[in-house]
Image 1 (tube, rainbow, N blue to C red):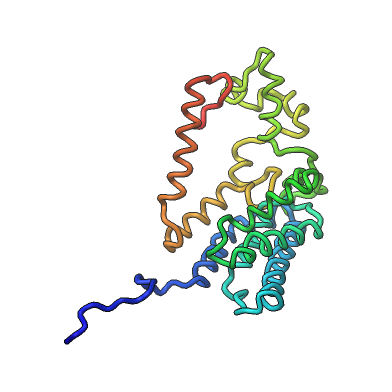
Image 2: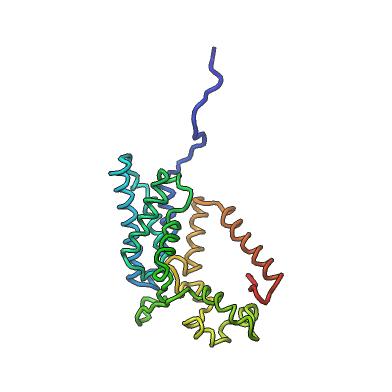
Length: 270
């Protein structure tokens, strides 16, 4: 009798994509943000990204070679992705040894301890960032000032949170006065020169936020670079639009609700 039913284990859906192809698509998508970090943070950005990538790859290799003693997967690009993402989440002036500690935590604890790629419940790079932020709060919140590569000048450091963090912190001080947070944002930050002295540096305009000429982690400063990377992944179908749109849309809806309830305390997200 002919066997009409064939049973087999998963996967049942097949594609020409592979882990390696997907990982390198992500790497290509991060190139715009990487180039922007090189431009505004110079050799410090090169150092941080290079050391982070090398450290993540080496840690994964050592764990697989000598602890797990299984198949080596460093060629799939996932360790490189973790290294770049970890570098994108730290300041450009972070000491090398702290960066290596972050790589050990990201790969050794957040990834390999759970069985490797696809089995880790949390993003390894973000776990590394959180660990570093808790363990080394001063170093992780001392942000270099972004200066164009050909603009001259020395790279200074801002000790404390970034501009938006400082603005939020100072909102409580402004609330008791004649200027509310809502008025401050609506009328334009440039009108309030004294705010620059309060938060410790010059007020940032929206053009700088778009191109990346602001203090912060290497990968968060340029909105345009991040958008270009997202468009690339959309076109390559590495990701679908539903997840980022639903996430950003939810944040927008809640921000609008809070602003509608109390516009003097919460800014208009639009």
